[in-house]
Length: 153
Image (cartoon, rainbow, N blue to C red):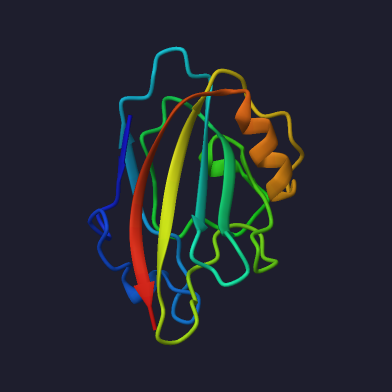
């Protein structure tokens, strides 16, 4: 499985449009190679370089395995009716959905977008805590793909 974005190349800088202090839009993402046995997809974006430990920027699950992309600017809603009824949780900034980067001035952080192919759907309520999403993923992942962007202010 592979995940990419037309907004940034692997390991390159995330454009300001996707940063918290600018437009704070989620970047467009595309993927391929989802295994046939997958019944659902989940996406997590996090920053392992945050001063207080890994910072979760986005938790989304319940995407159809037939879906091959997410558009730019996914709405900030717990239930995404336009995206297969997928669910989103509160990110570590306290907001539902995507929360763009805003690292401390002078620091460059890495932002990993990880797509998970799941053998079972996650039976979680919209707004589930990050720890609940991670725990539910552990036993249901068939495979995963990731892409990474950097950002600094």
